[in-house]
Length: 198
Image (cartoon, rainbow, N blue to C red; front, side, top):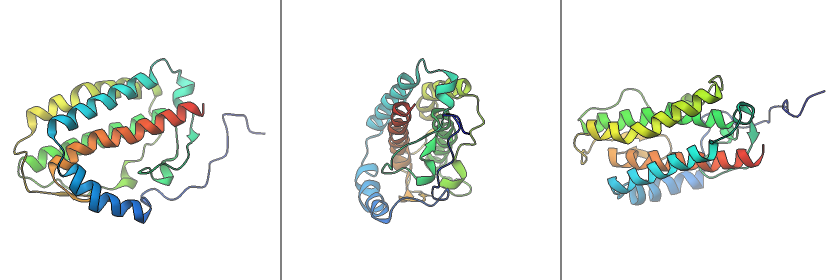
């Protein structure tokens, strides 16, 4: 007999399956060029800082058990189906994986270099092995330094070079910079839903 903490794994789509076609079209032909493409660098940074602070506030005071409990959240625009059964610690681990990769792409593009490899949503899923308190502590450090460090490394903000996002398509540095806060916001909403299901 399973305890309340041992619910069976839900059947979800495979990692990297993406988002529904209609949403992908909106992302590629509206959000990418008109929102991300015209985003103000300062506003993108302020948005990212605000969301990071909200995430830290949301996880403040949670126990190891609460941080590590996986909860199935409802479908959410922009969230792959395979990512719907995570713990809060896993969501933080995912941000710890993805945000440095985005930062690296921004630095490379603004300094006239193409990042190696390709962006792949299946490759950035959390393993779920990070200690919950470590995930919180490391995310707090990341939130404090990510934009500060970027400011010291960014070169030409108007670089024409692009690096493909799997759903948005070709993204310039400005668009990747915008995405840091937007992506954090997506997982902030997920974290709130996980908390509600604890």
